[in-house]
Image (tube, rainbow, N blue to C red; front, side, top):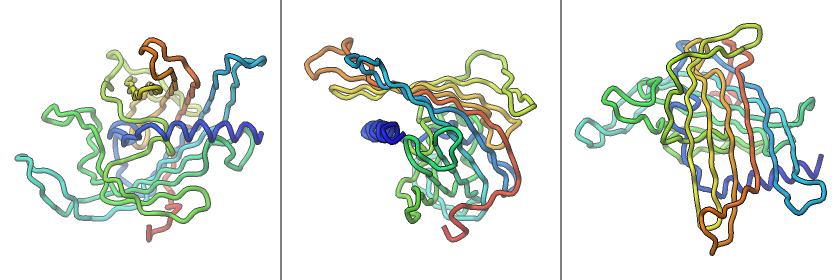
Length: 282
């Protein structure tokens, strides 16, 4: 298990080496529940394949269990600066909500995190008016990023630290979903997504994003199932992250896959008794 953990951490470090853009507003947060204390928990699998063309045993394939809990843990009015219709800065007092994310990836059957990462908690104050539940606003402008007023992040047993970013940033520690410039609905019909013994109607959206350097290329592709029947509006998500390399003098068509991560997460439970992992002071 120790070797599996090390390989997972090495891959996680490789992922972070690529520029990490904030997640788009529509990825994990499509709506805000009315009541503080509302939570939703996703569970699923995190699979990693490391390509080893010269190894006698072939590629290395590992699998972990993954959990993600999203909670609404408070409300307050706060100052928020954005742009007015003329593009000028404006600062207003607006209603905001505290949203907290907790992510763990661990071997199946164990209670301690020992997968490709640690336990991550990310708590942010979001202007309620900016959660619009669509990929474009009323003027048809893409709702690219979801702004935050302030926030905190805690990794493992370390102390919580104030975040510097001004937009929701869940990639890659909280989730492998990221900003997808081509995100759009897939087809015209809803699909049924199973949540325990029940099923909810959900609209699938698909998107992808490619980051490329001289010798590295990373392709992140996702399917998101959007539903009004679950808190925060997301019922399921699947992500594949493909890492490729080539020699600096080689052509673009000579990229070769070095690793593949596959994540499949679905809602398994919801509730109304959430409390912040970081307390009210953070």
